Image (cartoon, rainbow, N blue to C red):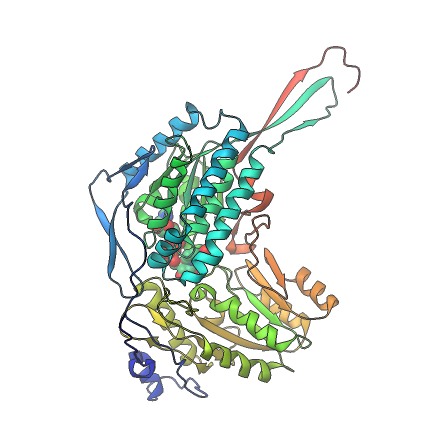
Length: 532
Ligand SMILES: NC(=O)c1ccc[n+]([C@@H]2O[C@H](COP(=O)([O-])OP(=O)(O)OC[C@H]3O[C@@H](n4cnc5c(N)ncnc54)[C@H](O)[C@@H]3O)[C@@H](O)[C@H]2O)c1
């Protein structure tokens, strides 16, 4: 493997060069610095691409149009494989397979224990194939292989164990009536679920969606993100090997405005679950309302605060704040993208946060020591660089990073801004990249008000040793998750979802089951009951 090291200092993006040469609006750059990282010649991933067609009714098939689209390696923009491109007709075929499997097939009719056993067999198969799956996930997405293999695949397996465990514990209720009636409340599967997932965690989003839907006896049409179609096809194949009946899980690769929109507006889809941007969330909600008024759950964007109080252990807080933002190349809906630091510890925190970012190892995600791979694609890469430029132009201080790395692929230096003000775009918008924005605060009331002054409400982080401070902040912050002295803890049983424009509903945990269940009241007269 050639060790072609490219100095990031030689490859500054054009706009930052112009900023550095003073052709910009005077953004302050305290000290420009390289993060001293390098990109090697791409390592060949240890996996073959076996599945590129659509999976409909248990069979791999070409798209009705015969069209394909390329899925690209984010390390260099080269084609990994050409994948069948699903469109309206393919969604129609997939929905009718799922409909038939629900209305006539064995899945909702088999015992919950049998369903659970298939899900457990599937989890075992995924475990057996987890090296290839981790390699495929990293190749298609660019995330570090160590993260795919040691964090995400084990969580994926855990999620299916968790949901298999629920399958035979979906209980209804009996409720007392005011009259002599026997009242049963049945929890029934809702029918055909349409699910649309993003590219940042292709396998985990598959598990968050498919796990609860199948545990509760539904059938599914899943539309994967066009950037990352490969692993869902692989695991869906394993699901069929585990005994899943045909038509229960259909996977359609394709684009949002075509395949995604067809699914959201389909008259025969009984429920829609979506994860992605707030803008697209609004579109799919409207499509669902304008078609058959199917219920919709949405998991959307965020601009999560990470609050470092004056009594925090600064070393640990720096590390957690760094992780909260930079994990997964900054491509997390819950990324701690506004780091609020108390004024008394601000200078110390800033120096350490900057030093930590400069130590971050960016490179080929297949290298063991790599902490950060490339951004997903050229669109996201350009968007992140635009936000960095806007930070400089709006007079935030660029402490480190700010440039692309190398001339191929979508690698960006870990970037830290200080002196960030609440109304700057880098503090209001979801950047979805490795850009940490550090803001100063004076007291708790102020930081709660500022942390909540956003259209989002997905998550928040709090760093303090004081239990009263922790309680005040955790209740004051309007967010679906508050992590105290930790971040990104994602157990299968912990519900996840957003306040405000971060979404509707909760995924994971017991709450996710409700998304896939109908509630039916059955009322029968009682003749001469001994009691009511
Ligand atoms: N909350 C999250 O987990 C999450 C994940 C990925 C991206 N994002 C945000 O979204 C931004 C843009 O990323 P993106 O373009 O991949 O997100 P997106 O919302 O456009 O895509 C998410 C999914 O929705 C589908 N989609 C797109 N347009 C659609 C339409 N009109 N009808 C139906 N489905 C449609 C896509 O094909 C994909 O499967 C990111 O910068 C980030 O801010 C958030």
